Image (cartoon, rainbow, N blue to C red):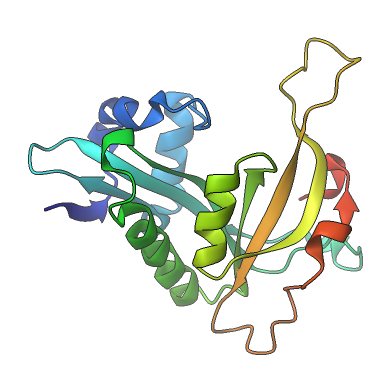
Length: 190
């Protein structure tokens, strides 16, 4: 049995069990606390019976600045999944799905057009997971993951920008079926 609840500041020291996965980004303490302060309804945790955090999702709502309104890369009001991770020993138990659904409910409550996220092109498990929840590739962000930032001769890994429409987007105007053919540079992503 697990409990799902909002993140609390004292949870930050309990996230390490989830962050052991090499595909999970670990952030500075202030980054987690900033998300908690700005978007508390989009930062949820899953706690096991012993009080250990075995999963969390961290998101935000945002849009591009008005100066970009007429750019092809403009993003309207939407929710973004910054991080979703589940401890290895509790994976495939439905925790990730429940956390994602909770964030989607918060996105609808915030009148978001869609929820988006970035995932490594090589992370087939995550892509399959998000596809099963109704997400699709909107575009490919070239060299998004700067794994070789210290060596300018090497490229980073591409990311899929995946999206799922929310209730506000009844006509699915912010989704496309051929997203893998639309490539953009990291500086085009806002």
